[in-house]
Structures are given as C-alpha cells and as structure tokens.
Amino acid sequence: MDTRDPTRRSQISARTVWTVGFNAGALVLLAYMLIQLRAVFVLLAVALFVALAIDPLVRWLQRRGLTRGWGVLVSFLGLLGLAGLLGATLVPLVVQQVRSLVRSAPGLVSEVRTWEWTRWLEERFDLERKVQEALSHLPDEVAQNLPGVVSTTVNGVLLFITVVTLSLFALLFGKDLYEQALGWVRPARRPAVRELVKNMHRAVSGYLAGTALTVTLGGLITALGTFLLGVPYFLALGSLYLVLGLIPYIGSFLMALLVSFTTLTTVGLNKALIALGLFLVYQQVEGNLIQPLVQRHSIRMNPLLISVVLLMGAALMGLVGAMIALPLAAALQEFLREVQEEQRERWGGEREASAPLPEVGPAPPEPEAHGPDEPVGPAPH
Image (cartoon, rainbow, N blue to C red; front, side, top):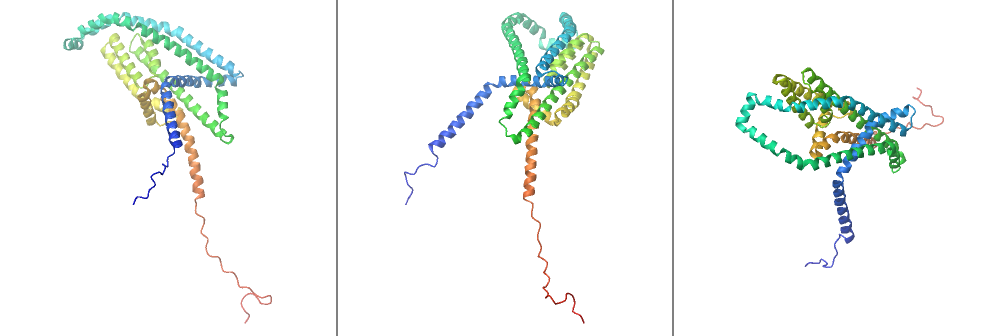
C-alpha cells in the first residue's frame, strides 16, 4: 500500500530556483560583456605594458630630484624626441632605399624571368597570363580597397593616441588607484600584497626589456649581414625587423622570405642562398637559445613553458594574443608562486599539528618509605 503523501512539497523551494537562475543569467551576461569588451581589455593591456616599460625611467628621474609629474613629462618628451631624431636620421635613408627597390622592381622581375626554373614555372603553370590578369584588375581593386585603407590608417592613429594617453594616465594616477585598491585588503595582508605586486611589476618589466634587447639584436644582425653580402637595402631590412620581430614566429618567417627575395633579386642566387642559410641559423639560435635565455632570466620562466604560452596566446587571440601572452603569463606566474608559498606554509603547519606526541613509558618505581629511625641501605651484620 502506497503511504506517500500526494500533497508533499518539493525540497527545492521557489527561492532556490530563482537564486540559481539569477546567478546563471548574471554569469552569462558577464561572459557576453567580457567577449564584447575584449578589444578594450587588449588596448588597456597594451597601454599598461607601455607604462610599465617607461616606469623605470620615471623612477630614475625621481631619484634625481624630480617630482613624478615632471618625471613622466620629461620621459615622454625625451622618448618622443629620441624617436624623432632616429626618424630624421634613418627614415630618409630607409625611404631612399625603398624607393630604389620599387624603381628597380620591374628590372628585377625581368631578370628573374630569364632564369631557367622561372621559365619552367611559366610553361607549367601559365604564370605570365595569371600575372597579367592580376595586374589588369589591380587599379579596380586598389580603388575599391582605398576607403578601407584610409579607415584602417585613421583607426591606427586613433589607437596610438589612445594608448599614449592611457599610458600617461597610468603613470600619473595609477599609484593613487593602486592605494585605493589596497584599502579593500586586510591590513595584515597588505605587506604580502605589496610584495606580490612588486614581483609582478618586475616580471613584466623584465619581459619588455628582454623583448627590446632581442629585437634590437636581430635588427642589427639583419642589417649587418645584408650589408656584408652587398645588399643595397640593408637599412630598410634592419628597420623592418624591428617591427616584424615583435610578432612571434610569423614575423621571423616573413623576414626570412623578405631577406631571401631581396638578396636574390639584387646580388644573385648564391648570396641569396647564403643569406637564407645564415638567417635561418640565426632564427633558430634566437628562438631556441637567445630569447628563452633572456626571457628566462627576466621573467624566470621555463623555456618550454614560454613556447607553450606563445602558442596558446596565438591560438586564442591571434598575433595580439601572442604578443601579450608572455607578460600576462609572467604576472600570473608570480601570483601562483605566492599562492604556492602560502600553501606550503599551511602544509607545514598541518604537519607540525599532526605530528605524534612522544610515547611515554611506564613510570619508574617509587622507593620504599623508611621510618625516621630506620637506616637507609643494607642492614648491618
């Protein structure tokens, strides 16, 4: 016989259902907002990295007696002046070499067409007809894409101004915001949090310094190598490396193609093969030795982990993700180190608390009581 009460209520109340549904909806809305604001977060991250890169110079000026505001102003003006000086010195040479390369492009193409293997490719794949068709449609495609190019250029300029402005504000007012955020931390925890933020700042600054060192070294070696091979556009190639070298993996691949093709069309096939071989060897040395060693000493990260982080960043957000993956991973690593240290201290306390007490053996037998007149020791004979 069924004795269950048909009117018995469910153990899940309407309030529980409402709470769970509300929290789930809030999480979905938060995830949607984060996805929509992803570009803003990337922009903020780039601006923060720029501010962290300039902050050591600002601190150095502060130690020389300047206030922070004047230190930030002098740093920005000095960097802009240095960039302008380098631009005024190198840009005319680079532009001249690029113009020479463009003017000589038809002759270079004609020279390439005289080679035996290019004639074989033309006969097999009908390259000449395809190139002529592409060139005939080039003016129309340029006219169609011109508004997009202008829009992209304007957006790039606006993004640059935004990054500079955010970096300036971060240097001027970031410390006040940081102190306000520390107000939400318990006073007993504030020294540990300050030390953690200091370590994260050191890791990110070290990564930026290591990247600048690696890219500068690659640009100098590219310019020097192409100069020794007799390539007339060595300054342009070295300057391009300073830009493309910031893009992990793909930048090196593009530079290898560019250096090889430029050397091939200017000084011949033999030197082009030498340039390609030297460039590939240097890229292997840079990617597997120089960069991991520099980043390992700057951010104290395992070289294998560096490669994995770069691949994950590129898979998640493309080129921008690959560029910002390592500094983010460096900051996260410092946070995880702090958590691990606290966990070790907690485990050590638990081991001390759970240590067994020393075993207590049986108490020694008490000596027999003697009377006041009874002698102690053996009885006299």
